[in-house]
Length: 359
Figure 1: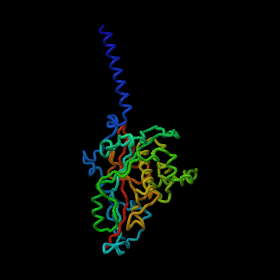
Figure 2: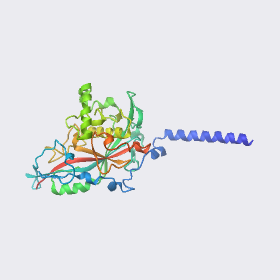
Figure 3: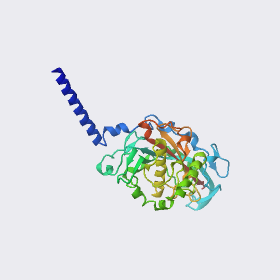
Figure 4: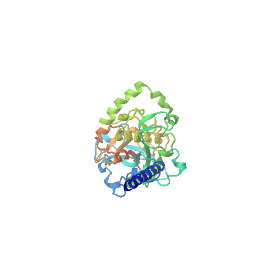
């Protein structure tokens, strides 16, 4: 009898376990999502300060003077060298001459995650994301996923969230004091989520946002990206080659699908494509150049030398950051390939910004 009782108890326990696992698998917004959503420690561990590269603010250019600190190779090559400017001033908005100020600022964060609405910056899921209307077109990411229309099977897919970085308020206080140009900073705010964008998980729909991709879908254009890959890793991205994303390969389509399965490479590629998509939608602005000295302006193509990325999670990239398209071996070195938690990344977006110091 004891043997039969044990068999019954084992079967009952197995049935209960299978039922529980089935319930968890069906509930995409339950505890299993909370387990898979890591905490980057920005608030709980003081990461807003400790995980930010303090030397990455330099060099600072004031007029035609020599750079203040930092490596001169960090400055974009296509930024005009003239140190003077004329912009609307503080006196009734009349144009007045001034001196140009150029520096790097941490303006935004990009979360590249597998679980829809998972936010490592918050350490939890984004509030209000579990409703059926917002979850309808969201897609589970990770390695080895299939697009919703079954048009392709790719090694990786990632969702992204675009945040305004709160520490940019401090740098904006400095630039607003001496510059008249409108600043893009502010408190921490969620500016964009890919889960509600139907073009992010469909290559077919994404083609309607960048039809020019057809012109670069040929062997010559694709092969030319090898030169940009070497330049992005060893020096700087080539500004005119907007159809390339350095070591990540072809820039198109602007979706979360990627043909590489390495987490550091695939998430960095997703972050680059996210910035390109945000520029195409007019959400991200160009912050340097002749037309951006007085006010940030829209640019439908990605100004590739405007940005540098710094990994904040899973392992802070200190004390440096890297150009868009740089091969992960030059900045990650394989240290980010951590099982489970190492597949979700949080990148700090550094933008080169110029303004006119006038009156």
